[in-house]
Image (cartoon, rainbow, N blue to C red; front, side, top):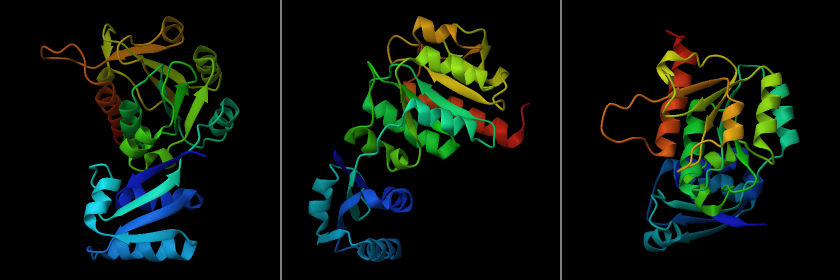
Length: 249
């Protein structure tokens, strides 16, 4: 069992809500008097979690410079889910599917940031590749700030095969490419769908690209050729959220 530390009130509350059994230890700031912190302390005490009250200086060190808001938890890392679990999840959805697919993405900071945005925009799960890609690591969990506990991450061995199966279940596969003819703002994101993001440098692989029903791009008006992967993902997911809430214009 691999352990990691999560920091901050929101991340701690997420852990208590979604996976309290994974919390093994807690550190709280003795100098901070906060109602939310006191509530978390009471809940952790009821769960029988080992709690150590420490000064802020020690918390700063435990949090490795991140904003801990007076609390740090030690938890076991979430586990990636299987292809069979993905199939079960898709088959039991009662609303239009929204999945994020990361094709050989290797930077843990990007995966962590994508998890945070996925949580915020109602994504049903992130699909990653087994080989040549980052999985759930302590760094991913720290960057995700609790979202690794709330957003399922499915690891698949053959992404092209998985995308073909998703299409048989009625999902549209929306790929991202700078040379695409239409922008995301010209696309219908209300349909059941999986948005595919390629690797940091090389983009989508050929076999992945061949499974896409539509390719879209982000309009770029300046001199830079592309955005950071997690930033681009955020733009795409929030456009999907906007359309699903307000209707496609």
